[in-house]
Length: 264
Image: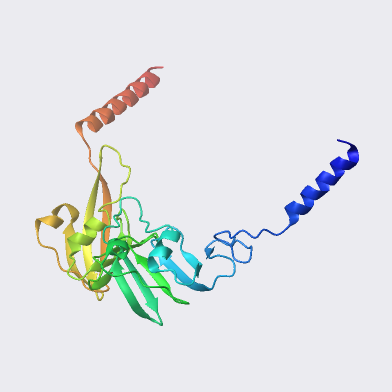
């Protein structure tokens, strides 16, 4: 093949490669793929779309443009499905659809795909919330059965996980202490003890004061909205016979050194 033929073949290849493709690529709208985090296209070019928002315990929260006719089940699949923190169960996770400022649909996640009803078709500006057992925000925790009335209380002080807690109505002080992880891990010496005290405050008044070790020996008070449970830890040093021997040995060595210096 001569040089002219090579140049002609190369020119034809460049022209063909630059021609617009007519293939329908899923995930593109007008040949544009969304790049911004939290903003996603899931429709075919030229297809009518609806824009919806999903947040909560899902793989990819954000704004979604979906093909007209997409259902709630489609959106949950496209957004990565329900997600939970490590050690949290999604057994009681709930999918909730808001439309026009009101809850239009709510169902346990496990029934969205296998329930007796078909997941609702999404409409423009729908908002979908995936409600799990544990919030993804550090310091804010949700521990309630979906659909039950809740209260919001505060765990403060030396808890392993202090913060704001959403609990079922009827939860007790001992329940919150357990959910907050009890006394946080703290390094201490072998001769050091930590005394922990639990106090329940309501409307500025202290209703309960108990050693943490004695807390579960009695029925703890039922919590109400706005209660604050504080856990105070106080360190104290305890002398053992080993400490006494060490001190005596040190004093003896010091006295011997002084005696030798005096004899010089």
